Length: 147
Image (tube, rainbow, N blue to C red):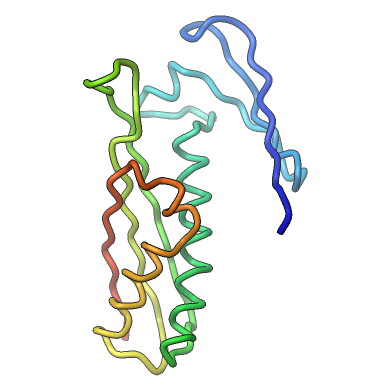
Protein backbone atom coordinates (compact mmCIF):
# COMPACT_ATOMS: atom_id res chain seq x y z
CA UNK A 1 0.00 0.00 0.00
CA UNK A 2 1.23 3.53 -0.73
CA UNK A 3 2.42 6.13 1.73
CA UNK A 4 0.78 9.57 1.50
CA UNK A 5 2.56 12.80 2.42
CA UNK A 6 1.64 16.27 3.62
CA UNK A 7 4.09 19.03 4.50
CA UNK A 8 3.78 22.14 6.66
CA UNK A 9 5.96 25.25 6.47
CA UNK A 10 5.63 27.37 9.65
CA UNK A 11 7.00 30.85 10.37
CA UNK A 12 6.97 32.67 13.70
CA UNK A 13 5.69 31.97 17.19
CA UNK A 14 2.60 29.96 18.06
CA UNK A 15 0.43 33.01 18.73
CA UNK A 16 1.73 35.31 15.99
CA UNK A 17 3.01 32.86 13.41
CA UNK A 18 1.27 31.06 10.59
CA UNK A 19 1.90 28.28 8.17
CA UNK A 20 0.85 26.50 5.04
CA UNK A 21 -0.12 22.84 4.85
CA UNK A 22 0.58 21.26 1.50
CA UNK A 23 -1.13 18.05 0.45
CA UNK A 24 2.01 16.80 -1.26
CA UNK A 25 0.95 13.38 -2.55
CA UNK A 26 -2.21 14.48 -4.32
CA UNK A 27 -1.01 18.00 -5.14
CA UNK A 28 -4.61 19.23 -4.69
CA UNK A 29 -3.75 22.26 -2.65
CA UNK A 30 -1.93 24.26 -0.05
CA UNK A 31 -3.93 25.60 2.90
CA UNK A 32 -3.26 28.31 5.48
CA UNK A 33 -3.01 27.41 9.20
CA UNK A 34 -2.82 29.66 12.25
CA UNK A 35 -3.11 28.86 15.94
CA UNK A 36 -5.34 31.84 16.85
CA UNK A 37 -7.75 30.87 14.05
CA UNK A 38 -7.46 27.20 15.07
CA UNK A 39 -8.65 28.12 18.55
CA UNK A 40 -11.37 30.55 17.36
CA UNK A 41 -14.99 29.71 16.58
CA UNK A 42 -14.62 31.18 13.06
CA UNK A 43 -11.80 29.61 11.06
CA UNK A 44 -11.82 32.63 8.72
CA UNK A 45 -10.45 30.86 5.66
CA UNK A 46 -7.83 28.71 7.38
CA UNK A 47 -7.82 25.02 8.09
CA UNK A 48 -6.59 23.19 11.19
CA UNK A 49 -5.26 19.78 12.16
CA UNK A 50 -8.74 19.01 13.56
CA UNK A 51 -10.44 19.83 10.26
CA UNK A 52 -7.90 17.74 8.36
CA UNK A 53 -8.48 14.83 10.76
CA UNK A 54 -12.24 15.28 10.30
CA UNK A 55 -11.80 15.12 6.52
CA UNK A 56 -9.65 12.00 6.76
CA UNK A 57 -12.02 10.32 9.21
CA UNK A 58 -15.21 11.04 7.27
CA UNK A 59 -13.68 9.80 4.00
CA UNK A 60 -12.17 6.68 5.58
CA UNK A 61 -15.39 5.86 7.43
CA UNK A 62 -17.50 6.25 4.26
CA UNK A 63 -15.26 3.80 2.40
CA UNK A 64 -15.24 1.27 5.25
CA UNK A 65 -19.00 1.56 5.77
CA UNK A 66 -19.79 1.07 2.06
CA UNK A 67 -17.69 -2.12 2.06
CA UNK A 68 -19.44 -3.45 5.18
CA UNK A 69 -22.90 -2.64 3.81
CA UNK A 70 -22.09 -4.74 0.73
CA UNK A 71 -20.62 -7.49 2.94
CA UNK A 72 -23.93 -7.55 4.87
CA UNK A 73 -25.90 -7.99 1.63
CA UNK A 74 -26.90 -4.38 1.04
CA UNK A 75 -26.24 -1.92 -1.74
CA UNK A 76 -25.30 1.61 -0.72
CA UNK A 77 -27.01 4.19 -2.93
CA UNK A 78 -25.65 7.19 -1.04
CA UNK A 79 -23.91 7.90 2.25
CA UNK A 80 -23.31 11.27 3.85
CA UNK A 81 -20.73 11.22 6.62
CA UNK A 82 -19.82 14.15 8.84
CA UNK A 83 -17.02 14.08 11.40
CA UNK A 84 -16.91 16.73 14.12
CA UNK A 85 -13.48 16.79 15.80
CA UNK A 86 -13.19 18.79 19.03
CA UNK A 87 -10.07 20.35 20.51
CA UNK A 88 -9.85 21.22 24.19
CA UNK A 89 -7.46 21.60 27.09
CA UNK A 90 -5.46 18.58 28.24
CA UNK A 91 -6.01 18.85 31.99
CA UNK A 92 -3.71 15.92 32.79
CA UNK A 93 -0.68 16.84 30.70
CA UNK A 94 -1.11 20.51 29.84
CA UNK A 95 -1.58 21.98 26.42
CA UNK A 96 -4.37 20.71 24.20
CA UNK A 97 -5.78 17.41 22.99
CA UNK A 98 -8.56 16.05 20.85
CA UNK A 99 -11.50 15.78 23.21
CA UNK A 100 -13.92 13.87 21.01
CA UNK A 101 -15.05 12.90 17.55
CA UNK A 102 -18.69 12.64 16.57
CA UNK A 103 -19.45 10.71 13.40
CA UNK A 104 -22.87 11.33 11.86
CA UNK A 105 -23.96 9.22 8.91
CA UNK A 106 -27.16 9.12 6.91
CA UNK A 107 -27.59 6.73 4.08
CA UNK A 108 -29.84 5.35 1.42
CA UNK A 109 -29.23 1.62 1.26
CA UNK A 110 -31.07 -1.14 -0.57
CA UNK A 111 -31.27 -4.59 1.00
CA UNK A 112 -30.66 -3.71 4.69
CA UNK A 113 -33.13 -2.88 7.42
CA UNK A 114 -32.45 -0.33 10.18
CA UNK A 115 -30.84 -2.93 12.46
CA UNK A 116 -28.52 -4.18 9.70
CA UNK A 117 -27.60 -0.61 8.78
CA UNK A 118 -26.76 0.31 12.37
CA UNK A 119 -24.77 -2.90 12.91
CA UNK A 120 -22.66 -2.20 9.81
CA UNK A 121 -22.26 1.44 10.92
CA UNK A 122 -20.87 0.40 14.32
CA UNK A 123 -18.59 -2.18 12.73
CA UNK A 124 -17.28 0.49 10.34
CA UNK A 125 -16.59 2.84 13.27
CA UNK A 126 -14.42 0.16 14.88
CA UNK A 127 -12.78 -1.05 11.66
CA UNK A 128 -11.98 2.16 9.81
CA UNK A 129 -8.18 2.62 9.79
CA UNK A 130 -8.49 6.25 10.90
CA UNK A 131 -10.73 5.22 13.82
CA UNK A 132 -8.08 2.66 14.77
CA UNK A 133 -5.40 5.36 14.68
CA UNK A 134 -7.49 7.59 16.94
CA UNK A 135 -8.20 5.08 19.72
CA UNK A 136 -7.13 7.59 22.37
CA UNK A 137 -10.11 9.80 21.50
CA UNK A 138 -13.74 9.01 22.31
CA UNK A 139 -15.60 8.44 19.04
CA UNK A 140 -19.39 8.54 19.03
CA UNK A 141 -21.71 7.58 16.18
CA UNK A 142 -25.18 8.65 15.09
CA UNK A 143 -26.38 6.54 12.15
CA UNK A 144 -29.69 7.03 10.32
CA UNK A 145 -31.10 4.97 7.46
CA UNK A 146 -33.22 7.00 5.09
CA UNK A 147 -36.11 5.29 3.38
